[in-house]
Image 1 (cartoon, helix red, strand yellow):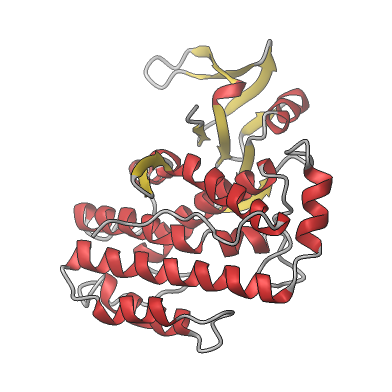
Image 2: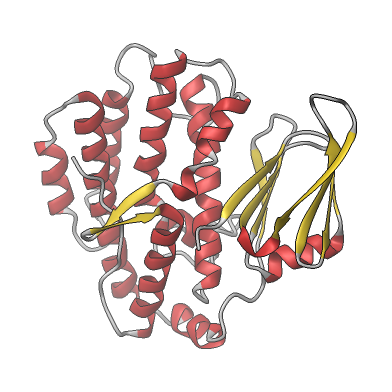
Length: 304
């Protein structure tokens, strides 16, 4: 089942009754109180954008029991917090042990696969969006060594960001400032929540990364595994930019567009899957790598 992402930007009271998320709000057209519901089992993530949204503890418990992610936004409407269930898999203890005891060579090999696919997908974005020749990107992707000691990820990223948006926007990738960065950060936050949710469902700890390591980051592994998925967000943002001519701030329309990230189709091998399903396949393959039953990660690949 494809899970839904619900976003609440206006005053509302959210509770749970008979496994249904109950939403009490004000009708925008009439100004009258209204109530409607959504099955909790259909929800993959809930985004709370407004400080005027109230959630009952019963609802929070039901969402976490259903392995849904709860995303809280700051006063700028940018995601700032993420809540996930403590238990996500019946074999969680076994998988925790395998993850903790994973050898450094294994982690380096997994990072090699991750970086290689990220560069391939970045190259595919450049070709699809800007009709660029991507021989250099494909070469870098094939030359990534275990652990990426040559930092081909960084070299490819410098070339990618220089050419993705072109000179029209004077774009510099960062966390503050212009329209593309705001949209990218919002999209990446949604993507991060999807990957973190899938990791927990696969019985893994989102904290212990294969490459990223930061004592203040509780989602290092999610940040690792989302890397090949980032170009899908980049494509969506580029489409928004070209349609809306560099919006100065994120709008409800662009948010609705980016909240569709979990359901966009991606290619896994010869089959097309919703991104949220693909993320589950990726994290399940990672668990198998930790357990020693395979050495190959499953990642989606953007078609050129």
